[in-house]
Image (cartoon, rainbow, N blue to C red; front, side, top):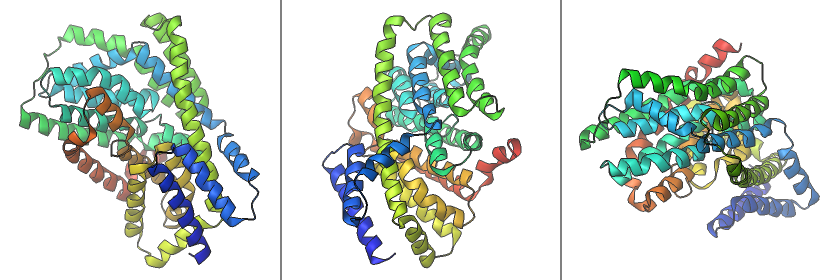
Length: 432
């Protein structure tokens, strides 16, 4: 890097970190850091900041994000969550530590319906965390299982971060969604293995086995809810829907289920539901727009090219480069929310990966898994914060229980990073 670029990057990121340390909201911190960079360059009009923030949101594809979020809220309030829990209980509840298995399997099923990890933590966690504690599960283990399984929601399709990555990189959303299926199952089964080993060691209880007749009744009752997955995934892969259209149809389907099938979604609940979704969407949109402006600014000043040249000057070993990229993303996940992280770092890191022959879909899955790990790592892991809030436990008291889950997810991340076919097999098979 030239001295000017080093100075620019240093000032922008020092300003960004300083603002975050004094608890300035991430969207404002990103905007102020960008403004500082524009002022330092001196030959760019300030109006360009507002323009690039608008351009960052001016995407039809991004409309899928609020629709997926609304779908998740409707499912949580409309009775779908309860049925998914019951279905998970049929499959794994009878095993030792059954509720831990149910927690993870429910997250895997819920993930395929809305793609928002925080909604998973809030809706499933509010039911399962008290139930597990009541059954004698230690609180730290309960929080760890809930917070580490919820991020599966962004690895399985549909995935909000994949939509963000697709917009930032121009990659096919359909291929990304397909690319996340095998990594999602690998991650889920790895978490199940860890939870099962701990459950057996601590002699956690098994739940009463559900009769075959009752199991069939539960499975049949869940079919309309599971059809949401068919609408989203099948509609996109068949070419019948765009991702945004699929999100809209899924939202309508979830609404109809809540009103007419489960009959738990009431008109009087709708203002609260829409208000809650709007608040979340507003925060995410502001972060995306601010991160888009900062990403454009850094790219326009040659930062991405300079970083790539700098890494190539250090090593031309693909394995080392990918390890360094993973370390950068894991570090970013410690202190930055996934929406600005995906928007900001995709245009910076993707050209480096492509220069080493990494497929954009494969790299997108690597980024998403890194961000999933960031969702349950302190200090700002949103799933960890929500789970601790539900359990009434301070973060420091549960960190030890996270270690085995964190380590197994790192192993899965390395496996996904260095075996590209895990991410590319289904996209190449079904969308070539």
